[in-house]
Image (cartoon, rainbow, N blue to C red; front, side, top):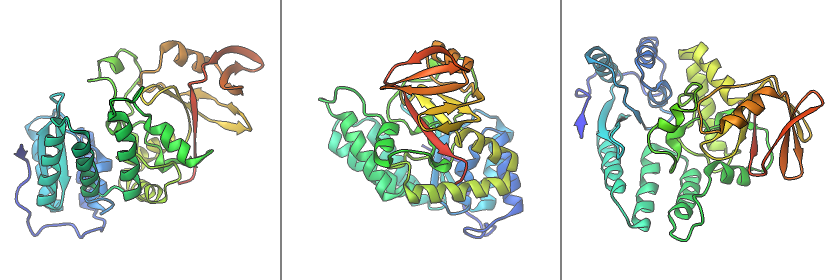
Length: 326
């Protein structure tokens, strides 16, 4: 484990306050590959720490990051994940960062389900995630880790089950955040083969909400969206464009976002699809891209263009509706 940050100095940004200079540094770091949402979340005291994949970068990028940490009064720890990638954990409290990293490293090698789940609860607390969401995550993780489980539990589907029908406020849409999955393909080879572009940074919540109507999650996401609007307005609008829409999903890792959606009862009229990189089968992506309307038919979905039926999606597909308002 290597510390990246210098000692905290007296040149700190007031807690929860706004700083044009710090926003400029944060914007520069986003262009260097750092996760702006995570850094702003800590800067604005929306959460106590964040963790995300470390960009490759070079000496100048690391120097810019060190300058940001020093001026913001933050610390950072770097660690290697089980798949060999580097992760950064950033926050104000050095002791809390070290405890989180220690728990992460210990959990990666654990085989005891109960001990691993206890660590998950503490890690959620350190990260400042809502207790209701941590409890729900632990409940789903227990199902996923159970040796008798027929298949891994789906976090989005359980969030939908707890919330009922949409549309839901867009800040709780975490579906693009692949780092919030507990299981899935190792590495990104499978994703790269699908084409499209990565939308991993088009999210507001780094955690999985207990339900799509979780008020603590909505509130934190809305606050972060407001911070993004102040710091990087064009990027904030692009994030919203990805989140405030309808998503057709077949699994946690395979989904297709729709744009320009108008819903009428059990029909969804749409203008286009977003070519984001997921594990959705190419045939499904192309079918939805060629249509302009979805219609629920029994347990499945029909894809139409005008009145012409183009094809059907299997009953395993789920539609998530997210509203334009936070």
